[in-house]
Image (cartoon, rainbow, N blue to C red; front, side):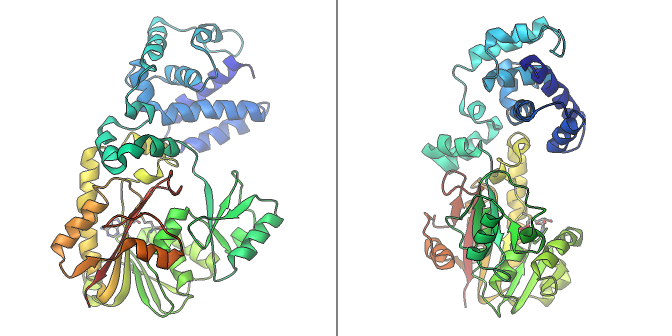
Length: 427
Ligand SMILES: C[S@@+](CC[C@H](N)C(=O)[O-])C[C@H]1O[C@@H](n2cnc3c(N)ncnc32)[C@H](O)[C@@H]1O
C-alpha cells in the first residue's frame, strides 16, 4: 500500500470504530482479515495511525483547534505527529487518486496549519495526552517526575505472567517458556513474576491452558503478595471481581485455610470460575455476595481483608488510553467517597490484630492516600504499618514507600500504576 492508501485505510477504520461500540482492537483485526492483500508493514502503519488518533484524541483536538477532530483530521494529524508525513506532503498525499484520501477542504487545511503552530510549545496535558483537569492531580502525585512518568505511561504495557506456584516453580516455568521459543526473564520485584518480551499469543500454550501461569501485571501480583497471606489463615478478598488477586492469594495460602472471594455483585464473580478451575483452586475459593447479613455474620473473622477497590483506572492508561480523556474531577471525587465507604464495610471483617490491605490501580492521591487518611480518622482502632518493611518482608525487594502506602508506576518500578496501603487493626 502507498502512503496515501495507508492514510485512507486508517481514516476508514477510525470512522468505523467511532461509529460502533465494539473495542477498537477487534475492528483492526476484522478490517485486516477482510483485506488479506495488506502486508505486515501496511497493517502496522495503519494500526499505528489509528491508535495514535485514539490515544491523542484530546490533544489532537486542541492542536488542530477542531475540538473533537473528524476521523480525517485526526488521522492526518496522526500522520504528521508520527512522522509518516511532513506538513507539506499532506496536501499531495490527499489527491483523491487511486486509493488516496479525497483532497483537503479549507477547514481541514486550516486545522492542519494550526497544528504546525500549536505543536511548537504545547502544555503538559497536550504533550502527554490526558484531560486538562487531571493536570493538578498528576502534578500533586508526581511533581518533578511528571514528564518521566507520563512518558512511561505513553509506552506499551509489558506482558507479565504470574507463576502458579501450586503447580510449578518459577525456574521451571521460565525453562518451559524458553523451550517454546519465548524471550522471558524473572520479574524485578515479584518473586512469582515473569516478563515476556514481545506480544506473544499465550492462549494456545499448554503452560497457560493448564494453569501453570496466568497473565497478570506485576503490580497486581504485588498487591496480592502484600497481603502476606499464609497457609491456614482466613483471608477475604472484598472486591474480588474476576479473581485476579484471589488466584495469587490462593497460591500463597497453598490452598490451606479459608479464602472468601466477595463482591457487591455476585454476577461479577462468575467470571473467575474458569480461571480458578485452570489454576486448580476452584474447590478452595469460597464465593459470596456482600450484604448486611454477611457483614454481621463474618464480623471479625479474618486475619486479612483485601480491598482492591473500584477506581478511575488511571494507572492503566497504557492499556486503556480512552480513560485519559473520559475521567473528570467529579468522577474522582465520587470514587473516593465510594472507596471510603467500601473500606468502612470491609474493616468490619478484620479480626483484632488482623490486616486490612487497600489497593487501587489509580495514581491519584485523592483515591489513594486521601482515602486511607480519611479511613484512619474514622477508625482509630486501625493504624498504618511500616510500608517499606512490609514490602520487603513480602517480596524480598526494597521500594520507596510513603507513610500511608506504596505507589508503583510505569517509570519506577515499571508496573501499571498501583497504590497499596497495609493497615493493621489493634489487637
Ligand atoms: C478493581 S476491581 C477488582 C479486580 C479483582 N480484584 C481482580 O484482581 O481481578 C473492583 C471490584 O470492586 C467491585 N465493587 C464495586 N463496588 C463495590 C462495593 N461497594 N463493595 C464491594 N465491591 C465493590 C466491583 O464489582 C469490581 O469487581
